Image (tube, rainbow, N blue to C red; front, side, top):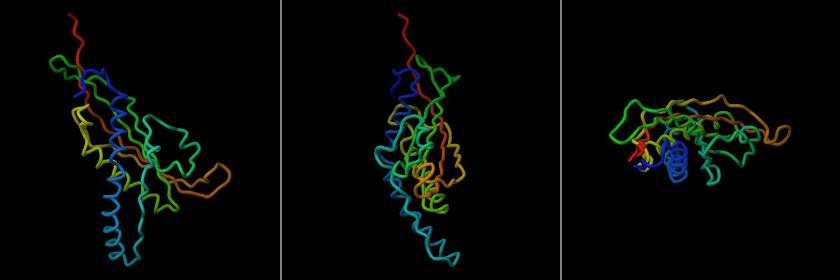
Length: 194
């Protein structure tokens, strides 16, 4: 465990981003197969024809450490889906280990997706959440940087909104965002005062 690095907000933020960068699209593939079967079963139960939803991959240059409000202000379709990882809150833990202090770091992972219609957008959002959670559950210690997740995530999905590619022209798309909030404990070596 990296205990030499101080509080570690940015280190944790980068490690989460890297974990998602390395593994999210594989987790999306797993969700795609799972939900194709579920969609077929749902169609059988409801008597409707299957409505297959393709979960879009997140392109390599669409993973962002930090908050990116510009993605909301100018939502060009080729910038979606995207992932932003923010670790902007840390607080000391009451627990002090021998020669180490602990910081509890709050981590927000935001995903933004688009779709051609409301149901496709909603399904893509929910399925992307599952893929993100699977990646972070499988790497909960962030390659030894932390002691693991302190909680299951708090998940908040926004309303879907319809907007043109550009503010006043272009094709209409449906957009939706989700935030997953985790917390983790980062151990920090105390300075020696020799």
